Length: 357
Image (cartoon, rainbow, N blue to C red; front, top):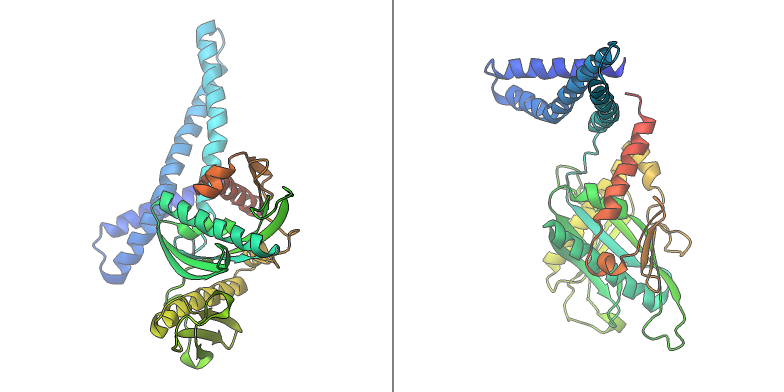
């Protein structure tokens, strides 16, 4: 089926749904038809714009074949042809992108997990920088940032930290942050001025609700123990820390941030649910599984998606070969949109290349 035939089918479907909605549907039928109509509406607008431009192009093409046109008219026609020749591929691509299968998790919130990798204390300090960077980015986007857990080193670094971020299309924008992030800088404790390289890993999981994944009580092993702080000292004298194991998958979540065992258990279950949900998504979506297969890696310096070079003031995303000399704006102020917009466009281009529409 040609691209044009596909567009006509969408317009016909939109017209049918419009007619149905005017016939007084009720209950589930009305809800289903309304959703379908609403989902098609933005695509239909793009198709109407494309068809209008196509018709204009055909008319101008016929006009350009006319003989005995004066110079001014000929120039106007050539300019209009040039404009439409550039516009039509842009509109066609916009339609194809709109028709790509949507990731059901894109509209969800996200759990962001940051862990120190290779590099000792400096890696932990960098993990804290990354966690703060995502907090700043969430503030810029007007998203809600809720810290779930932080395991600090006692000197300002984080061995690991996680947060729940809620807002508009959070997972759609943050999912490209999953992977190994590498930093090159001179640590404050380095007297000789030697540049150190260390790494931290980031995992971005779609927030899972109870309706997304069913976790049976019988599949959980819940252990409680006494929470301890950095260096192993006890921070309370009750068994408030919680470790939950999902027996079928072997996924383990341990939490001790809250003084209340009940609160630690609730937060741990939220994280566990999202990890199980993501594991199930990987099983049913082969393409996504392959794309994210090595997203976190071992934390080794050689596996990286992005490098933050402080002496040179640059941030480089290796997936899209993009470098910005704005390290302060990116790391300190969370200005990630320049990278994220290009990563989204790159992802769309890859999907388009794999899809025959």
